[in-house]
Image (tube, rainbow, N blue to C red; front, side, top):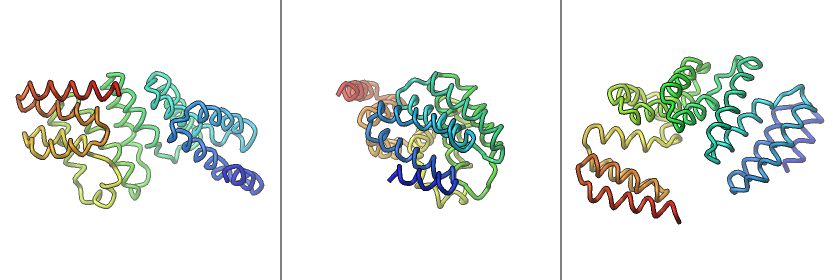
Length: 239
């Protein structure tokens, strides 16, 4: 189906559909955890950007490389590709707001413990929003900024961002973005341990769930229970 879509898009000169077919096909293999296959297809897609549509699709290639390296926890390479994507997009399509680049780039900087750089990137993204009607993009960036501020223990600033996230204009898209981590941080800030624990139990990935439960119990002063959860988190990571 992807091949047929590319053939039709090439025939009728629709580059967006041509590379959409590539991206969909690559995303399938990424979701199946077949990353060598995904990288092979991505290399083919990148080669096509040299052959067809005058380089259209190059930004998407860089973004996909960034996404795959981020998944592989190779933040240095992910950052390199995201920055290449951002620079090229700014030159070629200045009308784009590039939230899909700013957000993962800021997250990668946070993983590298480059917190000020992470916040600078996400602030630039927020300042660069183009279409006020696409609220989900603003909300995702606010969520990323809020988490980073909480993580850095800049709680008052984080709470200001969290308050912005409660604006009724975001009600229709709130469920589409997983805000569980900033919600837990918010409850911890207010010592509302009951809600924090309830939300932590909703985290599906076991190691992550136990790590957050350990964090909550430490905040409560239950260090023995926190230690037990840390042990469970470590065990889950080994499984």
